[in-house]
Length: 122
Image (cartoon, rainbow, N blue to C red; front, side):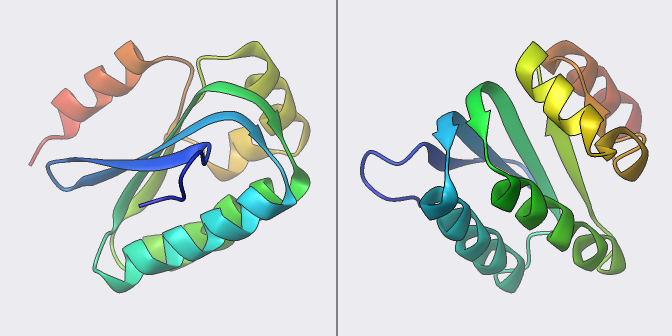
């Protein structure tokens, strides 16, 4: 999934769909991200991870897309997880209140997310 030379790609890990986001996510990539998440949910994905460790710019539309699908995924019994690993992303998401919105599913690094998975494995 994702277009050629796109900063967005998907990796599957068990029941998790991991969306890898790199570099800059502008308006065009936000639209691509919106379609990608919609497609994943239509295919039955309920546990979606955003790996944002390599993001250098995240436009407001991309932030809105992620927030938009949170309620839908939770209503389906799943969740959206954010792995930031990046000072810029931490600042941007913190400034828009994602720490409260994604309480319990926002991780500062992959190791913390891995520990969460171990504890919550079913």
